[in-house]
Image (cartoon, rainbow, N blue to C red; front, side, top):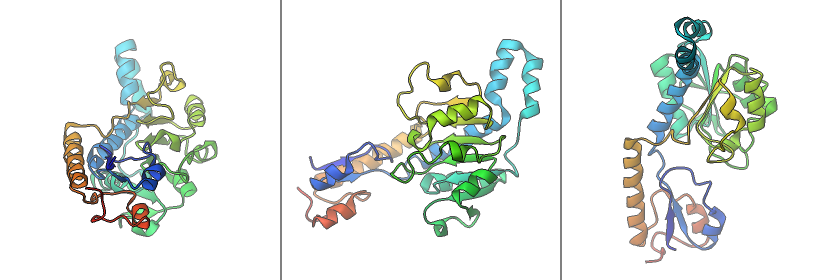
Length: 266
C-alpha cells in the first residue's frame, strides 16, 4: 500500500498511527467542500430560526391559521449573535456568510484565537455558548473535542438558542442533547452528523419536532464532488509517481521516519 487518499476532508476514520508506522502517506482534499458545508449550515440555521419545517408540517396537517401562528416564535439572523466552534476552512466561510451576508455578530472559539478573521471575536468556549443565539460546530474530532458539548455546556446556552452540527456527531453528548430538545431547554438543533451512522431507525432524535436531521450530506453537492474527485486524482497521481502528496496529513510523522518526497516508494 503506497498511500491513502481521503475523498473528502475528515480523516478520523483512517488509522493514522498505524499508517504512519508503516510509512504510508495519508492525504485528503481540504477546502473542497467548504462552500457546500458552510452554505448548508447557514441554510438550516435560517430554517430553524424561521420555523420553516414546523410551518410546512403544520400547514399540511392542520391548515393555514395553525401554521401561520408559528410565526410568533420565528426569529431573524440579522443583528443576532452566531458562535462558531472551530473557525477553520468551513468555520471561517460560515463566519463570512453570517457577518457579511446577514449582518450577524460572530464569536469564534478555537485553539489559536489570534488566527481568527478580524470580524470574528475570539471568545472562551463557555462564554461563547452563553452569549450566542445560534452555535455552529465546525471543529475536527480529536481527543480534545470529543464530548465537547455535554449537558453542562448545553445548559449554558440561552433557551432560544439553536445548535447546528456539521462536524462530527461525537463532539456532542447525544443523550444530553435529546433531553435538552425534548424539554425545550434549547429551542432547536440541525444535525448532519451523529454518534452512530447511519442514524438508527426509531432513534430518539427522530421523534422530536424541533430538530432538523440530514444524513451527513452537508458537503455533498455536484460542485463539491467534482472538486473532491479532481483533488483526489491529483494526490493519487503524485503518490504513483513517488512524490509526497500536497496535502499529506501525516507528513510530520513520516518525516520523523526519514520519509521525504524523494524517498516515497516508486
